[in-house]
Image 1: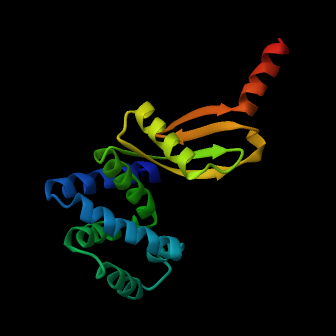
Image 2 (image 1 turned 120 degrees about the vertical axis):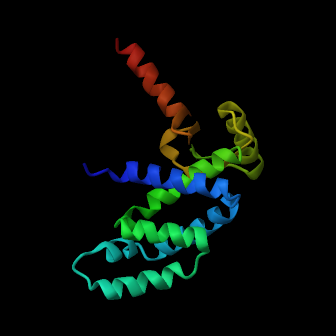
Length: 180
């Protein structure tokens, strides 16, 4: 039975995180994976190129070796396994899972906050503290989106949860109640 990409990402990311924790290298591995993510974002087709069976295996191997040589033993060995099992196009999902576990271990939650207008730095900082406290974390790192369509309030997406405090959703709810 073939595993879907998300299951692969979770399993491999978990395995790497547990191994990095055992070897007390979680932070170093995290930083290397962030570098690897940046490479993948700059060359989006890389994962597909190295898993394409139509391409010459020696050329692919040479390409991957150039990439792998930039990394330390643990990450390099892990990448070898990912390559051998033909999972290079799943690498970003693996990195995402590792990052999620690393952040959780650090007491950090990442999320997105959507507002009708841009927040000041003090508002963003205050909201970040409130979100961290509400979700039970020490710190929240929030990326910001501005969407005038929400009219006011905030929508927070973090830790697989959505907290919708937007004026638009409140008006939609009122319309629904009045329409009954």
